[in-house]
Amino acid sequence: MKVLKSFFKPKGPPEEPTWEMVEKRWSLEEHRFKVRLKKKGEEIYAEDLFRTAAKPRDLKFSRFFLLNENPPGPHFAPSLPEALDWFRGRNLPKDGYEHIWWGDKVTYECAVCGARRETPLRITQVEHLTVATTVPRDREIAGWRVIEVEGELTGKGMPTRRLEHHKLRPVIIWRQAANQYMCGNCARKLAAVGREPKAADYFVFDLK
Image (cartoon, rainbow, N blue to C red; front, side):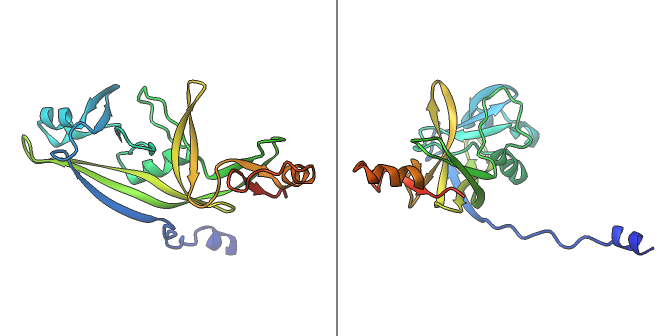
């Protein structure tokens, strides 16, 4: 009976999120042709979606992204749970558009010997963006995405992507650490022969 009581014990309250929500609102009258959406396998501007939508259900979309964003951030998901899942590589959308993800760990790889160290990657900020228009009528959509993370060794950074060998690769731009890595062993060997790397160019990490 004790086993049954333990098995059917009510679950505690869900854990509080560890990230901060950043609320933003865009008016398309001020940001014309800067929002692209994926809808039913096609790409359209937000203006076209609002112009042709006759009913609220016509405003549904797969994802949207901001044009000319530098550096480019993740795409916006239609819901917060989807944004968190996509960032970690779970339940990715199948809408005919390439998708990249950052996962829940960050890998530091030595530029000299290739040695690696993995540490947890924590989400610290999520952006909630509402895109609205009053022309031809009042319409709006909302999307969510991860905009800041924290690595155990490198502190906080911004997720972005980079094109390498014709393929998009997820990267993180650290705010207070270099984005090239070198293990402590290689850094010490180079220093011993007078070839120590510039401190500003590499983040030196110790192997466990």
